[in-house]
Length: 72
Image (cartoon, rainbow, N blue to C red):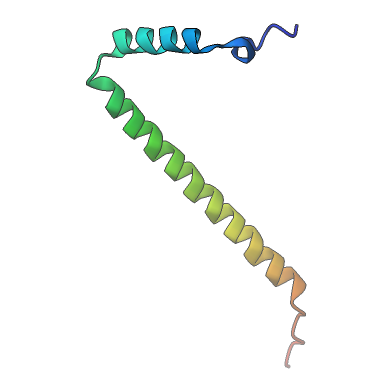
């Protein structure tokens, strides 16, 4: 069961071999495009998380501030 996560035992040689296989599969021109897309995805995810944290903060402030009495 503990051998399921094979990434724990990767050495420098294995990483080089994996990088070469990826280079052979995708080619030299496709890898920068993939990394650019990955970067955009990570940035979009971080922006989304910041928006969620901001909304949570706004809701927290609304809950904490005292409610004003209604004027009739």
